[in-house]
Amino acid sequence: MKTQQETILILGATGKTGRRIAQRLEAAGRPVRLGSRGANPAFDWDDRSTWAAALDGIHAVYIAFQPDLAVPGALETIQAFTAQAVDSGVRKLVLLSGRGEIEAEQAERVVQNSGVDWTILRASWFAQNFSEAHFLDPILQGEFFLPVGNIAEPFIDAEDIAEIAVAALTQPGHSNQLYELTGPRALTFAQAVEEIARETRRDIHFATVPADDYRRALEQEELPADVIDLVLYLFTTVLDGRNTPVADGVQRALGRPARDFSDYVRRTAATGVWAHQG
Image 1: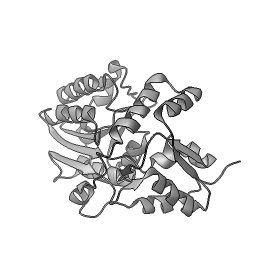
Image 2: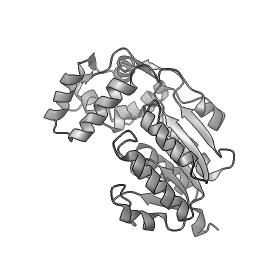
Image 3: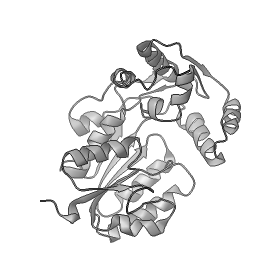
């Protein structure tokens, strides 16, 4: 019988990785506490008064910071949360980090120096960004424009991240490990869109646009200024080729190769999420 001390807190529980991690843990019969603004107790990164109740009786935490570790103030927030988690008795921290981001690496060091067991999941761009995030609408519209050139990215499947996170949270052998997580091959955004178009038998046009034009398009969609700044930072700074090399983190963590982008495309196309609408 599981005790309260073995309860696992999943931050970002409604997000791409958190949702999958929670589902796996619940299916395995593990006590799980969902960390989100809509949960009970609620957890809000921007309201530190919610942290104590969310951390009460928690043994391990999956940390997925929203919206991104690169935003101003993120490092200070991670420092404060990590300290409070350790003080409350948490014995294991698993941090979702971003590949190629200086700010994310600073957050990694906070967790690594926390004094408790840790695992870092330093991930490349998610394949699921094409089906569960901002990229979905342009794919449905058949017109996809981004301020990125012929730069290849080894997209990681969120299913792999979730599987590794569950292992790190529940099994020995992942203590004090930094896993750099990528897919098995790098694709340009044009190649990724081409694979989706081919599998869905749709005509989806991809083109590169200047960053200023993309900013104006996001402003017309009335996105918040800080979100626009983050998106432009990721496209114009992180996607400069630094993350193109493939890493072996999935193989190291799970003893098998990473899922290929084509596997993700076939699986996702079968759900109908990319079916043309209108």
